Amino acid sequence: MRIVAIAVLFALAACTPGEDLAEGTPIECALGGAAGFTEECLMERQTRENQRLLIVRHPDGAFRRFEIGVPEQGLITADGVEQAIVDRSDGFVEVRVGPDRYRLPIAE
Image (cartoon, rainbow, N blue to C red; front, side, top):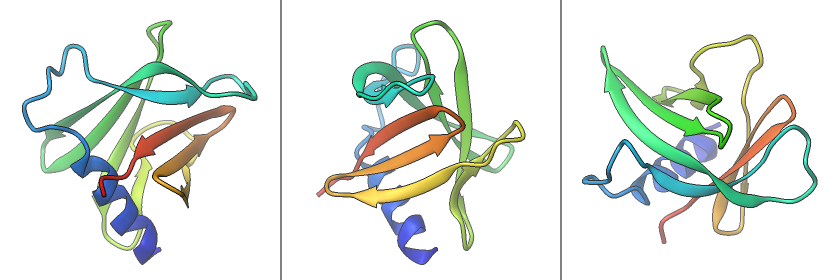
């Protein structure tokens, strides 16, 4: 779990502090069980009531919220029943929730 927490922190370091939150940072996603990834989702960060959140927006207006920096867990789903499964790969962290997958970049 410690590796997951470190990987998520590296992924978030890839976001620039001054990014426009209305637009976010493009990331690769595979939605609804799609086999291949496309760069059609947007990622943004927010802080709310001592929670550090990562929001991934889908092109159809849907979104997923994740809480980041959770002790001993790293990244977890912030709402909903389905839990995030986080795997580290070469150059990115893959987050899966239900049929949706997201690739978050890791800063080198």
